[in-house]
Length: 205
Image (cartoon, rainbow, N blue to C red; front, side):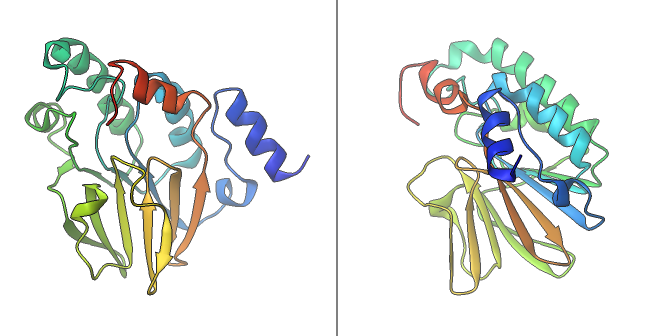
């Protein structure tokens, strides 16, 4: 059974396939996710337990099936859901966790519930080992100069590589970066992820 078939099979079954060489790699791992609806929390939890990332980056809209900016009356449901994701991330064993609150997040609540996380603003530059990163929710707020640019929010700025820099849209894929090798893996989200992202309030992002 080849890797492409396994990837498709896992995706259709609502799971996230981890390639054999990635799962068994001894390199340090950075996991990037974004715009995560509640229905993928369970497969994300299994991914994190299997992958054991050293660093996790979430570039916003942690409960993306609740468009909090448009539907503020859903704040109680949002808080209950985001607490579950925070617990999943806390139990990951990751050394560092970075969150860039999105337009549908309550940043103050996230900071209160996850005091050990690094809650950062749009366009923040960080370094992990010798690798430079710009983290943002909206790709339009990326600041030039970083080797890796991680974001989500919209498909308007597609995943690409230009001028020696990576632009990685966390809506399109889950990204796993190995360091110091600087290798990037692109893992598909489970089937139904986009339906959950866009259907709850019947609006676009």
